[in-house]
Length: 116
Image 1 (cartoon, helix red, strand yellow):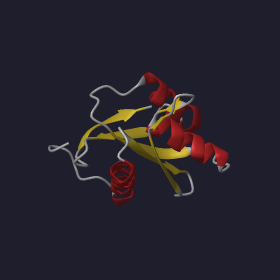
Image 2 (cartoon, helix red, strand yellow; image 1 turned 90 degrees about the horizontal axis):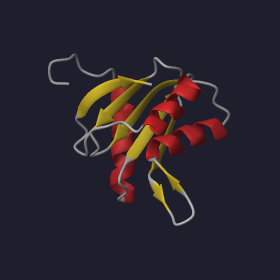
Image 3 (tube, helix red, strand yellow; image 1 turned 60 degrees about the vertical axis):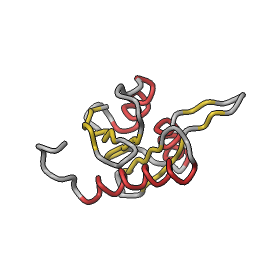
């Protein structure tokens, strides 16, 4: 995003939260979502023999389990160059098709902004 304007401070915050969650847990990915009231929910990838959830799916699930009825934005810290369609669908389900998803590398640099 070198040629684009800087992130809004609230968007930069969820990228930072996603990055720190991934780093703290040593997971493959970290994610954070912000609901329509400004609360944030963070998560890391879950990879158990009986349960696998991406960080973004889990962050959305945590928001839903807290009673959230909408999302303003989402962020994911990942090495992957392609946003998983299940991740996109989870954000769309709660936030709608125009919800921005900030895709960042492990260094926290936002590589692109996608829409759910």
